[in-house]
Length: 211
Length: 211
Image 1 (tube, each protein chain N blue to C red):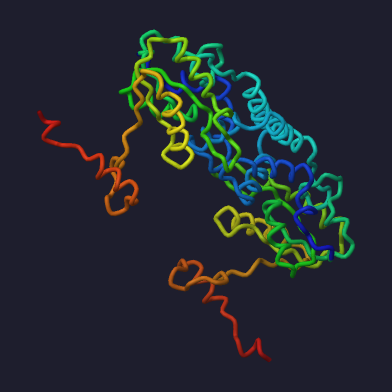
Image 2 (image 1 turned 45 degrees about the vertical axis):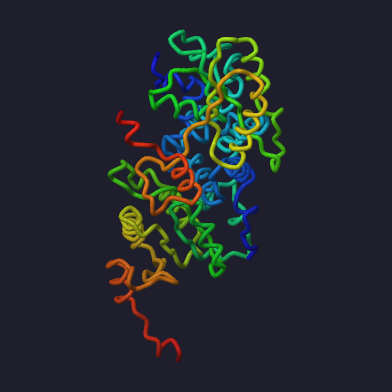
């Protein structure tokens, strides 16, 4: 008996699709196999639609000329929206972050997407991010009063925030950062030491709030 | 402020890809969003490769004219392999099952893929499965001595197994089914009642085995 090995059992075209799935984040070899076998069973038109939606996304998506968010128009819906306060810019790493911040319903300013964070270990420096566009935007729009840094709270996000703080320090614009502390609904017992430290250092005077 | 809703934030082409990902098994709305945003960041040639591998799979895969397994040739490698015992047919639901059964290294017979299981709730009857091809195969090859039913151990798989048993009962071919019992490495404490019942009913005389 010729023993079955992956290359013999998994046909070339199947292997190729498994490899494509494996490149996606969070998809291991077993999941990639399962997904590829599922594609085999799918209707031809659904597979065609999937395939087309992949290539079309790449060809149809632009970056907004103001906030750098993904857009299907030169300037995105949010930057065109005159009801938004364009004296406020909230700087985020990724388009997804805008969705989360906006959903809270208490921020009515504009955004700026960096498309990543500074990460020397992955060879990503400030010039790889859309920081230049942020500076140009500030220079063009003299109306800007505050920049809220909303990068992630990990090493790369913090480094990016500090870098922005430095390069913007010469301007008269107020630079702020999202508050750190215990997340809503969390147990103090399970909070990490860094979060506890921030929650203690940034503690709020309740009496003062009541006044 | 115009509130952001999904349809406004997620661009048409992005939405379309998110929808495509959501059709895959085990992919929820959050994962679909994450994957679509990841595609946005991928190199254009990698996305093209992914897209092509999807459509090519559908166009290049055939079903083996003997065992009905997926194949890139008219007759698959396993059915051509003369070192395999073609008096044995192991009937499975899906191509993936062949891989698992063959990997164990103790089965040297052939396979037959039904491509599904009988499921009245999903409108899948025996005629939707490749049972007709199995019967034709048995009629053509008078050498067949045993058919091992290896459908899944759920409701649909059991129903399919019982159906096969019935329609094959008039032949002189021996019909067997994979043994049921406790899986290797399992804790009796966590075994379900059905498994325990099968393990008890099919208990093996150890003395007899030693003889």
